[in-house]
Amino acid sequence: MEIVNVILTSILSAATLFIIAKIMGHKQMSQLDFFDYITGITIGSIAAELATELETPLQPLIAMAVYGIIAVGLTLITSKLPKARKFINGTPTIIMNNGKIYRKNMKKAQLDLSEFMVMCRQEGYFNLNDIETAIFEYNGRLTILPKATKRPIIPEDMGISPQSEGINTELIMDGRIMGENLKRMGLNEKWLKNQLAAQGYKSEKEIFLGLCDQQNQLTLFEIN
Image (cartoon, rainbow, N blue to C red; front, side, top):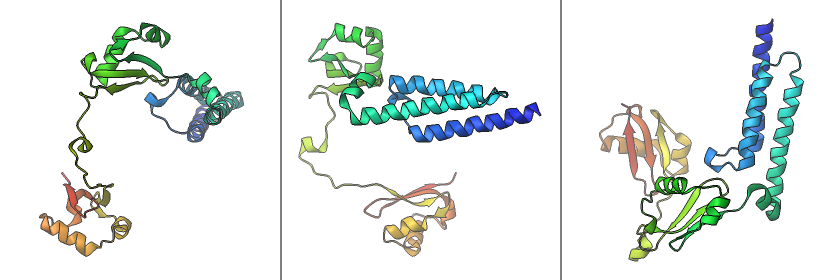
């Protein structure tokens, strides 16, 4: 009987955690602010307690709900009130600008020089002379603006206006033709079969993924 109760409370814990996560929304770990991070850890801990709490499962369940409501409430507040957002989430801090590293700002952000150098390398900058401005964001990420002479060349720099490529559309996935996608692009299965034959394939069953661009160019990845 006790094993059954553990199973039931575990299912309840997982279901509650899933519902709260859906309500709070999805963020990557690097996008979490400080409060989101500690709230996530706390709710996870309470969920683990709920899974093994057989006598009074209602208490951790209520606690999870309260934390979820607080998190959602703060999200609504920060989206409506800029001043509250600055207070709760904090503000970006300029760490480096125009060749000068601001030691006081690094101390304010609780960021030491070694961590700063690591974050620069993670962003692809091994030479600080290539950096115009470095900003430590409130979510813990470092945003870097390279010097004008070090930024990648773009078509606009060369006076070129390339044609917009748009988003590729999946016409074949795991050996199956995606009929709705094909129809949406104004194409049909006969056209697709001809394209497969032109590239040396007898059937869509041989294709793991088939992508089509706005110019109706078909790119195929066969099943290995």
